[in-house]
Length: 330
Image (cartoon, rainbow, N blue to C red; front, side):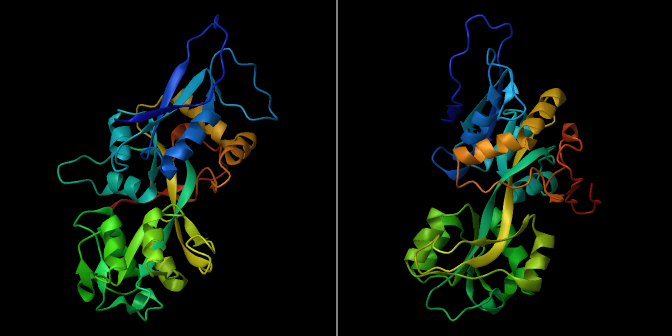
């Protein structure tokens, strides 16, 4: 069953002149990073009827709004729930947003999605066996590489990474597993490498590293080519000590997790939501509530879906939505 998290609201006076308006934010299962971020965002946005007027110099949510975080059992359901209107908004990774817009499943319609802001980031993890003499992704030719099932996020990621490094899937010994199953196979020595995008610290990657796996850096011209193939936001790093005291900083690519909405979101409410997210006082309050959150800009220059029209020029950038195959950027 989905889990709902109400923002910490306090008690509103009994004689409020207007009813509260509710907004749901679909997020990862309870206990995972996305749910915690969604709960912090809901708390920042909420300002139920009866609260004092906002002051310009302090954090303040959307007047009359009660935001809730709704946990979905599988994060793969978030984009579909938002696109169908079952949930008003959600937190979803850029690759899944792009796939829903541009690479829908056979028989499915492309999802009509817009972005309200980019909230946090996930890191690309390239993990190899600790005893393998591998120092670069280019050296995976002929090696056993987890590529995920056909049509999966893992398969798309693996093919893009291999392509950026001048390799085709046929040039590696592809093993069609992903996720925790791939990490266990890496730990057992049944594969030589896997690719994974996750918020740090990632429990699955930590399990592999504790069994002797190593992280490879993603840098140079290949990283630039990869950025053109996959909706990564910018270069970044997995900080030293994330996966044990002996782990140094590892350069990699970071993927945004965006706050998305479907076409049914009221434009007036969307404008208020983006105004709240753009507020420096609100963003500082969000960071204080979740100190580990690395807040991105509200939007980047290149995004996995169009920016909501109600945002206008509020964020100070004019982003380009990644083009679907056969289309021009928007």
